[in-house]
Length: 106
Figure 1 (spheres, one colour):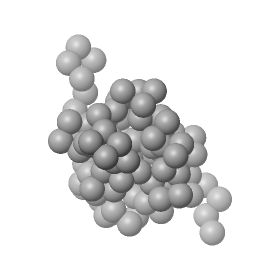
Figure 2: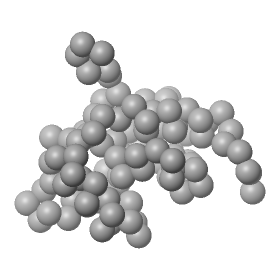
Figure 3: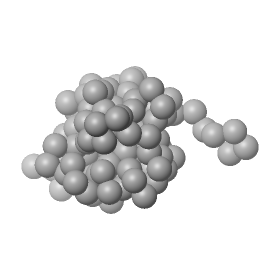
Figure 4: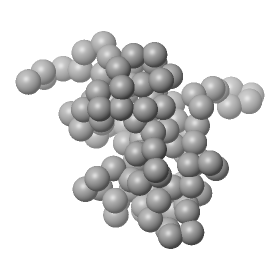
């Protein structure tokens, strides 16, 4: 097992750190933005090294929070004002998805 993140992991973590509060990306969105890896590779990076970044902002494409961390993620979404679906258990991807572009004025 790697003890330090490799180059791909560092890139993933950098993207996650840039996701604005109240916005999210799917695992696949992160991979697509980097033009490397795929959702599973991004998920592995998050599982191994994601604790130091806003991990709750990387979710499944259906808006579901990271497995096993649903309660904590939903607390973070409410604090940040992340748009949720009417069921209150998933993020509204249409409203909350971030495309990786810097916000205006940044």
